[in-house]
Image (cartoon, rainbow, N blue to C red; front, top):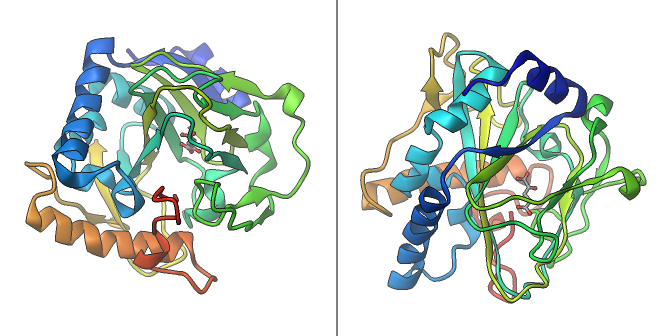
Length: 287
Ligand SMILES: O=C(O)CCC(=O)C(=O)O
């Protein structure tokens, strides 16, 4: 269902919208089972480069980013021509010490547009105990702010990038969601998440929607998938659609694109490239 004018207005003012039910609990569990089937058949806990642009190697995620209930949200806010720039899988294991510092997505995506949003879909419940997100309503109006790279190995973000200015945490909202619910956040919105201190796993996927007129500013070529309407600009090279999990041709396509993602996220550092999307010493991944 399309968002009402009041809901669109609220997104414009607050930079977020939540919670929205986009999947039944059964559909959410079916996605989780697909991921777990890959993990238990030798892939191991999803980590490193496979958590980026994951829709190129997992057909279930390529379908999820085209789910009508999710596209209704993206199109209500971005218009009729919409692309997916990337997808991320966010697992936080039981008693996982890792967290996500306060940051804006715009800081390291290199996109020249702020018509960019994330739909974060909970595949398990997301609670305060298992490390749900926190968001600062209205913070997107500040535009891009300064981040410091901390390189903290417990920080899931690639550079441990953290907003430099003090955050008024009293004003933050906890984004508690049930499996199958989603939150939406603007690319400039301040957000973070604490560690999972529960005995269960928390898993979510974030789908990053853009409009075709956006451009990548950090590297010369970039890729995206058109999921709605038309691309009248050609700023992004079209991506493959995988038929099976981790098909060999999809793996090599993903490898090329993950290298570019590593260059974007880690530009102006000595770690730029695929090796930047690495595992940390305890086997967990960075983003
Ligand atoms: O999954 C999380 O805990 C945080 C995800 C996040 O920062 C994002 O989707 O932009």
